[in-house]
Image 1: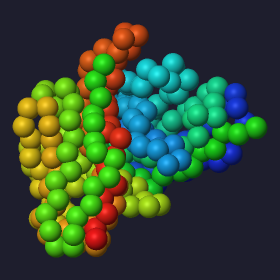
Image 2 (image 1 turned 90 degrees about the vertical axis):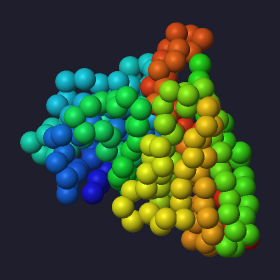
Image 3 (image 1 turned 30 degrees about the vertical axis):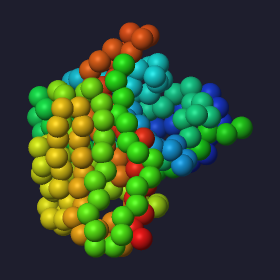
Image 4 (image 1 turned 60 degrees about the vertical axis):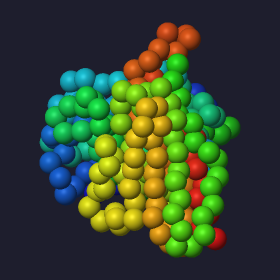
Length: 123
Length: 114
C-alpha cells in the first residue's frame, strides 16, 4: 500500500514537499516513481529513484525543479518541488517500479499506485 | 521524439469484445503496460509485458503486441469496465531539443459500455 501526503494550495514560485509512505512490501528493494495528472488530462511521469537512492531520473521538461529522494529506514518516498508554476497543478501519485533495477530490459510498469495527493498552484 | 497514440474514445456493447490500441515506435523495443482509471481513482495496472495480468485482474482482460502496436482486449465487456485506459512504455529516444523521454504515456482512451 502507498499513501501520499503533503499536497495543498501554494503560490507560484513557492516550494512544496510531498511524501509517500509504503507498507506491505519490501520498500528498500524497489525503484519508486512519482507521476502526475493535471485536471482532466492524461498521465505524466515525473521521476524515478533506485532502490538504494543512489540513482535518479526526472522528466527533463521539469528543468531540475523537482527532486526525488527516499528514506528506506522509514519506508518513505519524497518529492521536493521548487519554483512551482501554475502548470504544475495536478494530482501527484507515487507508484512502485521494478525490483532492484531502475529500468528493466523490456517490461517497465507501475504497480501499485497510491491514491494521490492534490497540488494546486495558484495566486 | 517518441509518443504513444491512442483513440480518444471507444464504445462497446455489453458482453461484446473490444480492442483498445496503442501505437508508437517505442513499442518495437519495449513492452506496453495498460492502466484502467475510473473517475476519482488512481490508475490500476491491468496488463503488462507480453500478456500478463496482475493478481485480481479478471481474465477477460488480455493484451497483444505486433510491431509498433499494442492492444488491450476486453472479452465480454462488463459495465464495471467503463473507464479511461492508458498505455505506457519505457522510452529513451531523443527529442528535437536533445532532451530524453524516459517514460511515455498514451493520451488515454475513454471506454463506454453501452
